[in-house]
Amino acid sequence: MLNEFKAFALRGNVVDLAIGVIIGAAFGKIIESLVADVIMPIVGAITGGLDFSNYYTGLSSAVTASSLIEAKKQGAVLAWGNFLTVSVNFMIIAFILLSSPSFCFSLCARSTP
Image 1 (cartoon, rainbow, N blue to C red):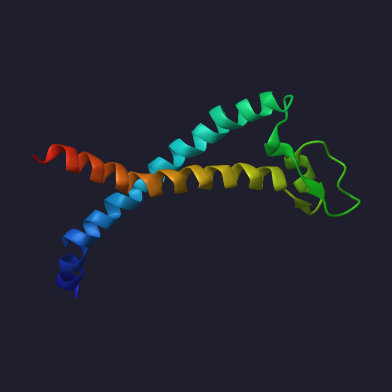
Image 2: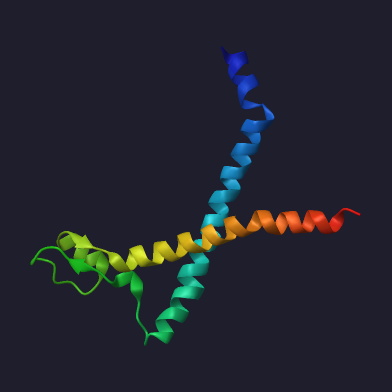
């Protein structure tokens, strides 16, 4: 059984998949930083200094805090600002993933004589 697992784990497809997952996780962190540290501050500056990460709607009358972290301690909240930020992350990742194959194909087409 150990030999079967070793043969499975060391096949090229499994190793390639593992490398892809690790690179994908690192890429996700880069995009998360791009959105949180570059794009959302620019959007906040354009909209008058809004910080979308702290936008929420309290779902009970007990929620009176001014920050999302404190509001979550007080009760249920709908953290729509955080959802907006995560949605921007997703859109950027989706755009890059959709455009990268065509970019790679165009590079391959230029390099072949």
